[in-house]
Amino acid sequence: MYQELILEHYKHPQGRGLRDPYDAEVHHVNPTCGDEVTLRVKVADGGKVLDVSYDGQGCSISQAAASVLHELATGSTVEESLSVVDEFTRLMQGRGQVEPDEDVLGDAVAFAGVAKFPARVKCALLAWMAYKDALMRSQA
Amino acid sequence: MSAPGFDVERIRKDFPVLGRELPGGRSLVYLDSGNSSQKPTQVVETMRDHLTWHYGNVGRALHVLGSESTEAYEGARDKIAAFVKAPSRDEIVFTKNASEALNLVAYAFGNPIGEDERFRIGPGDEIVISEMEHHSNIVPWQLLAQRTGATLRWFPVTDEGRLDVDGLDELVNERTKIVSIAHQSNVLGTVNSVSPILARAREVGALMMLDASQSVPHQPVDVTELGVDFVAFTGHKMAGPSGIGVLWGRRELLDAMPPFLGGGEMIEAVWMDRSTYAPVPHKFEAGTPPIVEAIGLGAAADYLTAVGMDQIKAHEKELVAYALEALPEVPGLRIIGPRTPISRGGTISFTLEGIHPHDVGQILDDVYGIAVRVGHHCARPLHLRFGIPATTRASFYLYNTTAEIDALVRGLHHVQKVFG
Image 1 (tube, rainbow over the protein chains, first blue to last red):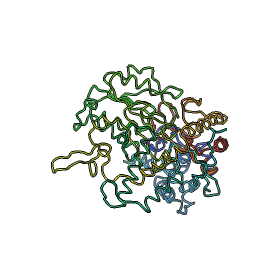
Image 2: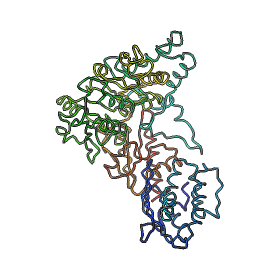
Image 3: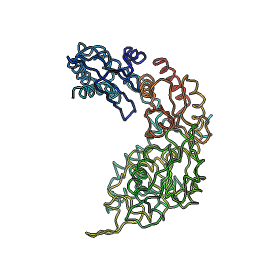
Image 4: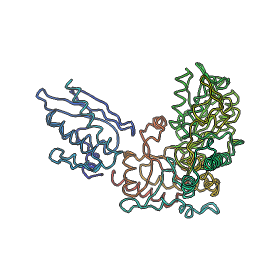
């Protein structure tokens, strides 16, 4: 479960810290463990994701997942990043039975092992669900 | 090193699961008894035997099986009454768990069906709990305050994890209707000193309840000696099954309280427009009860009594003293709660600097088969008090050993290596 890549992102989070400008900001909480994330998105007119910035506290899985999300989403388009979110969600909710699509997921494939631990799936998804929520608000 | 006559290796044989191999060939180190304890063969076999050979509904079936079940179920009540030294067996009410026992008492207050002055409550009246309570001793009182307009107040907790009773005389006053606190904290391990608070409650005419879920399994508890009005505890933390809890209450108070749940067996006579109620304890036991669970709890009380509650207390005291010495060797480890083995039980919660408890618990389990609890342990306000979102908690019972504490310390060093 604790892949080297996850620990690497946890110890050296990418893109951490809230930045301006942004189109939408959301705050998501995992009530069972108290993990929380505040996340902002900035999207260009053409649908390019200019920045995903975040801050939060929680376990290594939740913090590393936010860091990986930042890397994957920043610079892609809204549409592309949402397809990554969908694939990541499918992997996480697959109880370890889903074969992940590495081409779509990139580094996020390192979280495949988390799917076998139902109690930790929410940790991995916290920032990703917040991102989806923030995108929806930014488009509204 | 243990108390004379106490043989932990022999006790461990009564709990086959402790010898179980986990996936990947790890052996089990079970340090989560404060959450729920394991069950000895004696309890499992008693329940199996009853289900296999004697089962019928209780209190209403006239046939042989019904009589045998009723005798065993009521026999369990006798055993529990003796276990906590209740003056009368009728003062033992079987509930689903400790939460239900606490809710039952909270529900008696401000209830228009009841007429007793001691349970009348409204705006201006006060309920006193503490900051170290489990949610089950917070939320029922919040609900009562919301229903009736009464005010909820609480004892603060000191930095050391003790109840702060400096403001006792102001906090518990003539407006106080009930004081309900933990006998032993499920997070800090602190055993609260009941008598000064009880003395003040008596002075102002307030009732007093104890949540003894974490004390009854671990030390001899004598409800008469404690002198309070109500005590709640649960079966699954004391080597019994889940689904069965206990409310002990003073007879004349239970008599004065309105029923809680309505239904079968809690009545005396029913007309279409009204009912009269069965005497206690059955007044509070509507519907078919958890029969086999109660019988299993009786067997658990027999088991613990045979081992000896004084012996169990002494054994756990040794374990906690050992752990309080050993754990601080781990760099960055901070114990949340008393750091001396005085007036505290075998529950130790801690944080590791910079490492989230979920990661601690996961590595301990994955690599070493060590079962601890991580999170806020249903005591979120207490964690807020210490400014932390969560802790890792190791809790000991009669079957734990110092070797298991050594394993925990080794595991924590490894956690440090992974995340440090």
